Length: 407
Image (cartoon, rainbow, N blue to C red; front, side):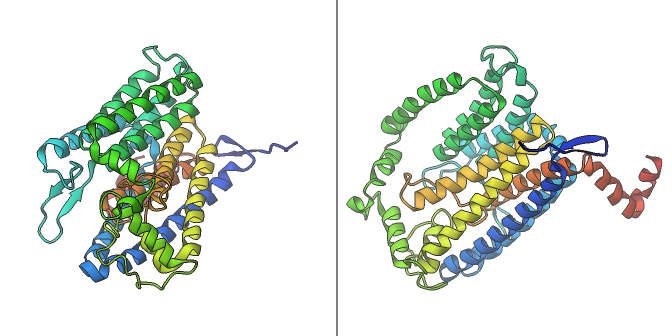
């Protein structure tokens, strides 16, 4: 039987040295994230330079910079302060999604982007990426504050009102014809509800009702998605039509064999494989660097997920645990879906590989999520660390020194 060691730090009790382990979890998570970003930028350069020069690479570096600023801000503020604005984030997400749905033209059949024409650096914002984060922050806080009502589905403080708010967000995402993100958000909500203690029969009932409705929506109201759903079973049957992307993805992996044909030597990236720098960048990775590198990427993603779960499990509060789980689920599910799509295990769906694919909104969302996860780990290791950090920074800034003295 394992011995339980109780330690005290800053008036808070910990079991088995969770405060020390959480600090290391945060350190390794930052290291894994930097590794994925470095690898992603390298592959992006290889994938896109021959077609668009350094445009995508330089834009990605700018978004990485913005993401690091956002992640640092999350660590500085702490997940508790950020969660206080959860309702405002949900409202802002709905407004941005509505703007994208009704005020901007469709791109490739979907209303997913808001274009901001800044001279020299036009910005395309994808509100659904920001909505993922807003739902994770809002729903984890909502469930954490109503834990004893989670098994009372129809109670006014039960899970239904929170599910209804998140379902409204999902509705606007669906209106933008982004079914994949909708399924991802629903999966995150399901994970949070399960860990919050909702009865399993309620979850099974929702899945039992939602599955057929999703099938009917795809079958009768979205011919394009139905074609994708059927073509992925045999992409070479219609290799010049609906199976074109997946067929070329298979060719890329087959060409790469175990060790690849060489960095920047891909043949299929030269306009044979659409979205090679975004959704199918891992196909080019398999072609250039081989199956061994793909296994290494999967291991790194698995390490990220394990670290996120450990940070959540060691958290000092149920709120922190649920938020950590939600954030880890967003990035983990996204990685699983992307790898599954490029390998033909799932139907073709526009879902970028976290930290690797080109995409500013997704990079910003992922790095912000990492900042919040690090905040949870830091708060486990050092309670109220952000207040200490705030006072330290104020003491180093001349015009703020007086505020520290007054405190």
